Length: 151
Image (cartoon, rainbow, N blue to C red):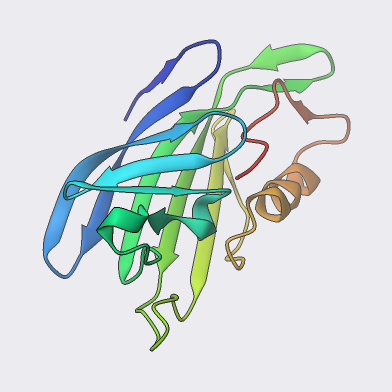
């Protein structure tokens, strides 16, 4: 999986999986929200747990699937930058009667310096999951850049 960047939007490659199979997808973030296209349907939201189809496609939330992607997230420890990769796994439960997913679980794993730091499963809160990882890193370590503000 790779990433591409421009001044205002970041795009990562990933995978979408559900009962019908798997397909490669692109996930984009413009700093205010995220979007992806699955089987021809465009989904957008303020964060990964809020992805909804466009109104002309029914407006329903994404449900009953798994999204996986990696993104570069360098860290700085004692002033020394080092490359790291954040692996993301978003499991979205089956749709309830109102169309909303029964659950949204986000698992983040930072691969850095030969070690893996896991967030544990959270309710789709990207910032909370990143905070869990940051607390596991050596004191004084920080992410070398801001990540998706609205994720």
